[in-house]
Each structure stands twice: as C-alpha cells, then as structure tokens.
Length: 427
Ligand code: PSV
Ligand code: MN
Image 1 (cartoon, rainbow, N blue to C red):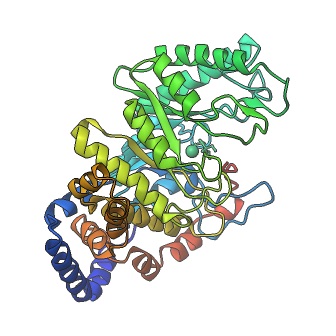
Image 2 (cartoon, helix red, strand yellow):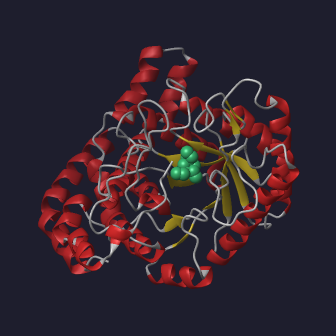
C-alpha cells in the first residue's frame, strides 16, 4: 500500500487551497438553503465495489496492451484494490469473477482482504466461456441450452460460485448470461427464455437466506441476433418469477444507443426490483469506459433517481453499487480512482437538487423552472465537497496527484512479474 505519510504530506500541501474552495462553496450552498453538513454526511457514506477484473489492463478482441507493474494474481489485485480504497476512502469491497479470480483458499483470501480493510461484494458467475476440463460446451448457451445436461452443468457452476462467495463473506451473486442466438431460427425465442427461468429457479433454490440474486441484462454481444436476457423487461420478468430475493442489475453500458437509462432505473425502482449497478460509460455499445467520461449528465440523472427513491423509501432502498469497466489505455488504478471521483460528483450534484421546488414546478407544468432545478444542481462545481468527503475518510484530497507522487506503479513494476501474466480478456 501507499505509505500513509505520503498521503498526509500530499494533503497538507493542498489543505489551505482546499479549505478556501470549500468555504466558498459552503457559503454559496447555504445561501441556496442547503444543509451542507447533511450533504457531506450522505456523500461520505457512499461507497462502490471494485471489480477484480478491472485491476489489470483489459483488451479488445484485437489486442491487449498491458502496462508495467500490473497485478499478476488475486493477491496483487487485492493490494491494488487496497490502494484505490486508501486514496478514495470509498471502495471497501471487491467483486470477484469466478473462475477468472477464483481463490485456491477463499477463507484465507477473505482474511488477507480483511488485513487491507477490504471485504467481498457480489460474486460473478461465468458460463460464457468454456473452462479447461469442463464436460459440456457453452457454445450454444448455458442456462438456456436445449440439452438438459449442459443446463445442469451451468446450474452446478452457479451453486459452486455461491459456495465460494459464502466463504468469502459475499451476500449476492450476479448472473450475466451470454446465452442467445446469432441467426433467426437458430433457437426458439420463447423456449430458450423458459429454460433459462427454469434453470434460474434451481439456482435460486440454493440461494442462502440472506443472499440476493442479481440478473444483468444486455441487448447484444456475443449473441448478435437475440440475447435471452436482452433488456430490463426480460430481467424483471425473471426476477418477479423467481422471488423477492431476485432483482435486476443495470449495467450502464448494456443499453442500445439513446436508451433513457434513468427511466429504466425509475421503472425498476417502481417495481421494487432495482438490485444494483455496474457503473461505466459508453459511446456505442458495451464500451466499458470510465463512468462519467462520456455522458456525465446521464450519470447525474441516474443518481437523481436514486436520491429521489432514497428520500421516499429511506434506507430500505439500497441497490448495490459496483464498477464494471475495462481499462485498455489507462492505468487501472488511476482509471478506478477517476471513476469513483466521477460517481461521487454525480451523487453530490444529485444531492443538491431542490426536490420540493422540482415537484412544485412539475405539478405546475413549469417546464423551464423544473428543468432549471436539475441544471442548477448539475452545474454546481461540487469538487470541494467530494474532496472534503474523501478527506474525512482519510483519503487523498487529490488522489491522482498523490498516486503519482507515491510512485506506487513504478515500485510495483520493479517487484512484480506481471509481464508473464495474461489476465482473461474482459468483455
Ligand atoms: C458482460 O458484458 C459484463 O458486463 C458482465 O457483468 C460480466 O460479468 C462482465 O461484463 C465481464 O467483463
Ligand atoms: Mn456488467
């Protein structure tokens, strides 16, 4: 990890400037009637899980360009995750992909993580790739497969992932299925869905009482004609049929261009089935870019729905927040630090929406003033608030600068043997 003294010194050098920026913003917000301390408390309470697969450089099907000092195994990924948490104070959990990051000894890994102040979030199953030694192929699907033996193998994999997760201390499994078809007629649109539901019933039956099953939809890729769980409608149908501990996970990149994702989020909230998020951003498809890097206004509008629901339902409303990105060009630690910062900014902006005023203007059909409430909140430069929330959690005021000052990657490059490591290609 980074020497805490480096963070302390780095913060110290920037403290005066920060305090001056923060007091200016506080004055501005108090003038507008905000309870700044309450906003700061909510902001400081925000956290998000890191995906184990985003700590190494990802790739596309055309190539992969790893950087020096990348983690070569799950132990080194824990170290890097701990650094992201040290800098941001907001990433205390890791989401593991099984078998990509399957631990030899999950109980031991849990212990190792705890020493870094980390624990485990949802575990992710993988029936989109064949694994060495596996009896049946997933080439034509897994939980939806026409052959009951393939479905049984995929169900057993999910049961295995749940068992590993239990040892890690996880309380949720995220199921993303690549199942689908590339050509019309290849498989029955209805029967493949029915078989998927029947298989998920078997998985759900094995779910520990305090666990959640999160279903992730995605319109295409790798299936290019029809994906079985292609949108939030199919995902919701599955969750509702399975039971109260099943819900829908929204990966922001899993929507066709121009989809109103905040409305998808709102619908799932209404249905009581918004289970969680995979945060990322995209221009075209499932691009897995840094959250907030392409459409920050959309990210804000999503957080606006979350804050709105939180105000209405209180702490009962707790979707799990995870990141799902592929860092092909950026240093993964820096990309994750930037992501967390962008998420916190979107959240802080959403906390500043004057909800009674918004509702008033909506009721009056005052379009301009209703929109203005959102824009005013979105356009507020909340960075001093985000920095202050980080500082209160012993993080870095300027985490990217501090990370570079610490020379962490350079020292990792001199001690790790990552050159020989080829992590599984992130999708
Ligand atoms: C699929 O594209 C996905 O979003 C799922 O969450 C997978 O688990 C992850 O990406 C794999 O990179
Ligand atoms: Mn995802």
